[in-house]
Image (cartoon, rainbow, N blue to C red):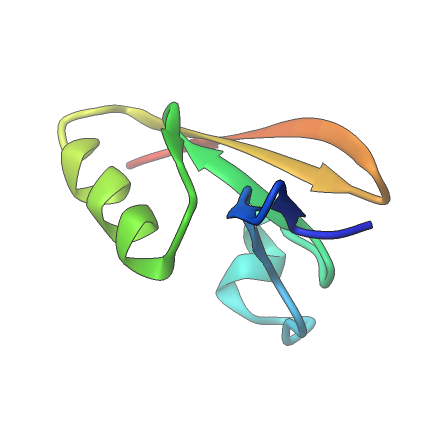
Length: 79
């Protein structure tokens, strides 16, 4: 299991999370691999920040990730 596909980064893996931290409260878990945010590839921290900036007017953020080698989607409401 590798975050690389043909030497191309295909996601950012979360190493550790605080059990009461923001990411854990949003539904993320340690070892989740974030692959995209609102359809934008998560190839770097900067790419994720850029995707979030582009989504400022949106009422939700859609995060595609892999957890335990299974794809899943987290839909986060923005208030």
